[in-house]
Length: 327
Image 1 (cartoon, rainbow, N blue to C red):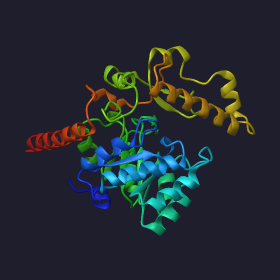
Image 2 (image 1 turned 90 degrees about the vertical axis):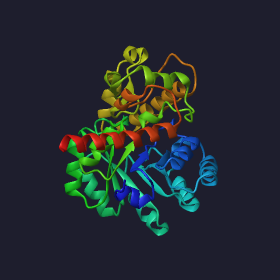
Image 3 (image 1 turned 45 degrees about the vertical axis):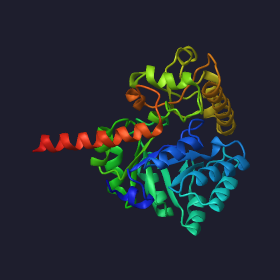
Image 4 (image 1 turned 30 degrees about the vertical axis):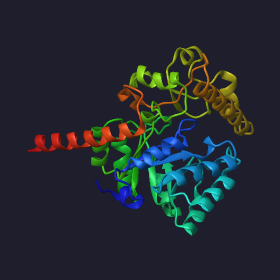
């Protein structure tokens, strides 16, 4: 299977294992790389720059295949510049930028021959990052886990393909080989897939988080603004039902205040990330777990490689079925 993404990164399948806050770790990245796709890890999953350096060096010592780092490029990430330059020095294969302007990342990466893909949710921003020199866009659709877009892949992918000349990688809502094939049929050059990899043996989150991805399905995914001030998808656990998914009156008022909304959002984000961290790594009744609708297809805890091998066989089955159907 050859697409612009496989040719660009030198991978077997046009898939990036999406960077998942708190979930993605070095073990998952190595397994993904050795299985023929490209993994991407959030820089913020490392607490310090020294931890980031050690993590990248570990990955590079265990695989020669491509992997990337996700950078949050807005003001909430005070380590962004240091993270960028450490990754440039160590030579990662690509970056995925989120939640801000990627201009500096693109400019500095070009000096090192490193690819940059940028999260986008609509055409205007996609065109802006293309004009800045991005190598591709991650089309975050309404099926994505975590911070999602507002358009389904069936609308967003063709719209971006008609607007941009650079590769379009669809993110969200896919958990089967047939789903992969269907998004490629829309014109996507690749996919970013995250939630199906939460319940893997390599993931370092709690067994309860992994089991939740098995026990719950697409109908159990809800959108909350309580974690970061912007819409974010979580599993509708009893605790989420108890606290609700909307900001309270005071939080909402502060987030609309001209002078206070910046600080209110920072406080909301900090509290929300601490809540997610506690739920992901320790036994807690405060179970707020990020996930997308593609957990619908998670049936057991298994290695990253097993999921990728299943995708390969499912793609072949779906392609054969399509050929039979079309005669």
